[in-house]
Image (cartoon, rainbow, N blue to C red; front, side):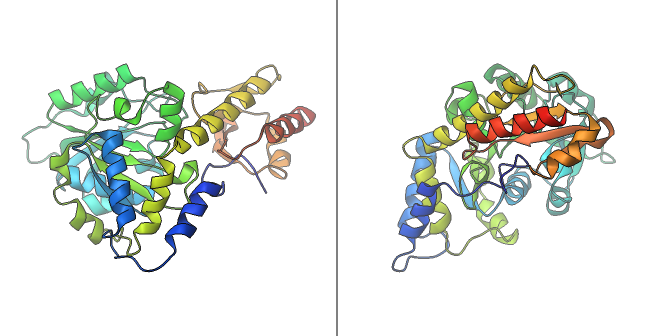
Amino acid sequence: MKGFASDNNSGVHPDVMESVIKANKEHAVGYGGDELTAKAEQLFQKTFGPGARVFFVYNGTGANVIALQAMANPFNAVIAAQTAHINVDECGAPEKHTGCKMLTVDTPDGKLKPELIQQHLHGFGFEHHSQPGVVSITQVTEMGTLYSLEELKKIADFVHSRGLYLHMDGARISNAAAALGCSFKEMTTDVGVDVLSFGGTKNGLMFGEAVVFLNPDLGANAKYIRKQTTQLHSKMRFIAAQFVTFLSDDLWYRNAHHANKMAALLAEKLEPVKRIKITQKVEANGVFAILPPHIIEPLQESYFFYMWDESRHEVRWMTSFDTTEEEINSFVEAIKRLV
């Protein structure tokens, strides 16, 4: 059944599915030596700048692990929000594969700030302490909030002035760009992001993400890291074909803009409903809300969604490129009946 649990639960956009079918003809050189992969790489360089280097992988955790391995030594520490996906939802994969210590920061909205990062910037040169090496931010954050371009630039300048690198987990980067009305380049290359984990699966792809090295020097060993991390796809053309379609004719924007619009509609319709409290700014395709506890289980029987914080009865609702206005209206009516 359709629900609001995750944009991972949505299907594959028909245009993306068609691109996979078209790629499934004849034979093609494996491991990225095919024409579609070359075309996709060119599109990424057109999107992020000629110096960008892109490596396609299976999933978001793989993208984050490869990015962080390329950016850090095992004696380094990675600084991230406590709610960050790399800290909460990747089963310790970043720590296992990088050997790095994770240093987390409590934030009310999932966003890091220079003054919050500063608390972990000590012990440099002292061999008994993990050496801070990377700051990782998420755009859109796990709380559904956005960094402005000004906030991103401020963080990048701060991080670089301390000799660290900046990683961006962009699992929902399309939703962020659509919401901010900016290009991918303006939000990454131009503000000073060093390495980006670029997501597509949550926005209409079947599978496949990308690691984009905007600081090309950091990508020197990425192809070896990708292989060691078991993220090198032999039939690479099936990932590349999806990204060619995704980055052409603004499909990424149309999908993300629609998902954002549906989340805004959901929040707007729930705003006047008594006893429903929206807890975060609705800036992309996520809505966080506190519900009366007695309605949660009955509502989940008809609409699949996740609890976010059981202690305060907070839930998370995600919209997707294929969420319809009719589904939003039906969901809101079900909530109203239960309340």
